[in-house]
Image (cartoon, rainbow, N blue to C red; front, top):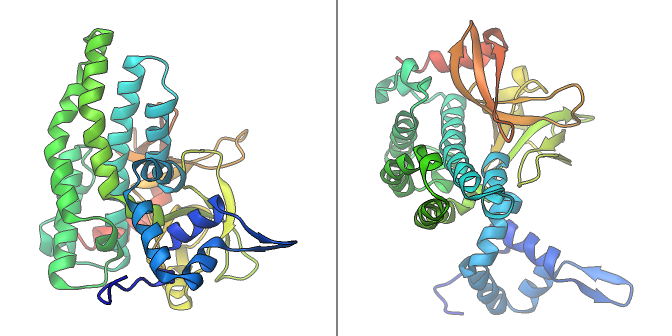
Length: 333
């Protein structure tokens, strides 16, 4: 390995975990973490393995399904592995595309609210924030990321969402029009359209691969405040899983007034913040876990949300989100 290249073990948690899960190191009755063994044995070999890991398309796709936030991972898996017919596959591809935009929007705006960024100075209006148009959401994402990068402020989303990728998504969003009339096409035409659109979707997901490091969760319980037991909402399985999410003390003090099971949170670069009101959850009495949903519009005096995986719209009282909305409204026009 050249002197110019330095690879820190702690900089690659996803790769380290992948090594542990896929390569077992055993000596008699003892087991050792393979990532740690490889790094200590030869940093050069570790770097070579890391390079192969980052370049392998099959590994990339498995990382999307296993690690990405629920909505994106779920629809991507469904579109590639669990579709009923060609029309259904296109519909799932469309849902995956939309979930990318809706999730990135909720994530970026959520961090901007958390860090009290003056969105009014960026020309962002409340009405535009509540718009259901993908172009409006992408423009807000791009605007906030551009400001964060140029001003040099601490903003975790800037590290995982390249501005150039948002520009690409805006450009490719025009291709999304091809989905709209898919039901009127023949099976062969739908196959051809999928073959055209899927590589573009995969290109975007590859550029967003650092989303695998974003932990999306709902608080489940906490014996100690800084180590809450949480429902993790990552990966293509919507059944959820429970894990401990560590929170820094200063960060906890910033969110303690609204850190409860009633909201969805994200952890980006060790910083935890709330994703309400644009990303929420629903859980029926017969369900054992929460299902994420995206804000779509106001109707009948309620916020209306689209539930991931259900083709269902669910209404919530606006007062549910008063704390987050009041904070956000104070930052926009």
